[in-house]
Length: 598
Image (cartoon, rainbow, N blue to C red; front, top):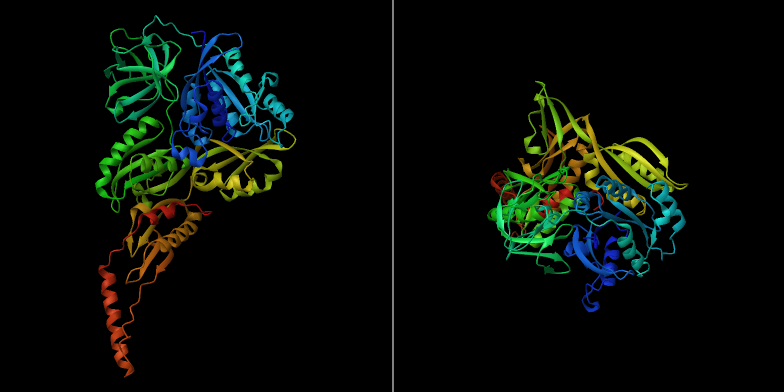
């Protein structure tokens, strides 16, 4: 066990985690050069297209150190975006140490601090690594000073690397071997293994990713999940290299997988403890803290007969993404679907794309919303996230919305632009402080509903990519909340309803009407698209009808003949409008979700 090291790489988004993982894999000869490709651990197409890591991936690296000892290094790669913090916390629960990666030109950013605190919560040994030292804009002395002042780590232990150029990779491997502690745990005690991830294989069932803390597990063992007492017979155990690699057993300190013919997807829960049925451990592991979704949206299949496929797809995706929460929902316009909770708007986009690609589904999503607290006239309180559940406004005494405490780290030259952006989003400026002579941390309190749409994109735009952002929810505060309905030809479309601040209702209604006007195809009759609060119409756009030239057959003659034909057409159009059904395409629902800048 003394020759095993379990470690993660944590950093702010785009500081080079995936590239460093690539170099470590190449240096330890896990993959042949001809089979190598960039971002080799990012297995999903969506990760490669966006250049981000979404899923934490595990790989076992065999390494012979300078002291001629052979080591087994279990790397658990992690995402950097704020929406995937839960993935990071799950990865850290399975490790004894972490490499904290800092960009040599960007320096310490918001997620760097957030991930450091996560690692300290798990009592991990931390090695600071400065990456991208080959860049012309790299300022190593400044970044070392930030590591000392902002992170409280010893800058003398910092390892300098350029993952892109392959500089300093051996120093990183030696640092892992010499500075990180080996795992503890007794292989002779009863089995205690933590489930930190899982995924579904259509041929083998659920494949469970585990970290063994004590005891051992091998094929033919009878195991039980401590949360629900489900019992299974182990068929196969092994470790993760680029492919799954069979081993005879997994013992204390190791990270690997179990296949046990688990067909019931809901039996496997991240944070659960696995033990032996005949020789169980006394207490389960503490597991992970529960995720708290902040953005809610309903997902419906485009065709009503796709509901069963959507149910199966969400069950399997839940295995691979423990932070996804969903429950059954129904809509007059869209039929049966699911109300889902997400950690952020990027998380929502990723879930939608994964369902469409991996399970071949066509989906419609409703406008994202946050949870609001309603205080009723009788003193009771309700929490709602779905506009369909919004009660009669006359029964509501007051409404509250969630506020976040946002930490924004920027170069000081962008202070004015960021201040304007936050104030435009109903933000309250609490404080700011200089971290160094030209880097500033600004603390704002912002309504979560304003942040989930396009705040992060706009922050990156106004700071030219140098702004970094991290947040946590603090409390609920009173606002003037209204339900905005969208009417098409006088019919309310419940899937397009939104809960908005009264001051933003007109602007939001106009934008929704304009986008629907562009997306809904023209008919032979006039279509009115309206935004309404209760019985008050606050915005309107009209789709003009196609016009058939009924007078084309009249060559000259008396004008009354033309008038008679036009009058006949007008009566026909009026009757058509009374019975006309408007077909709303999927793109129309999606267009309402897009931000102002799209």
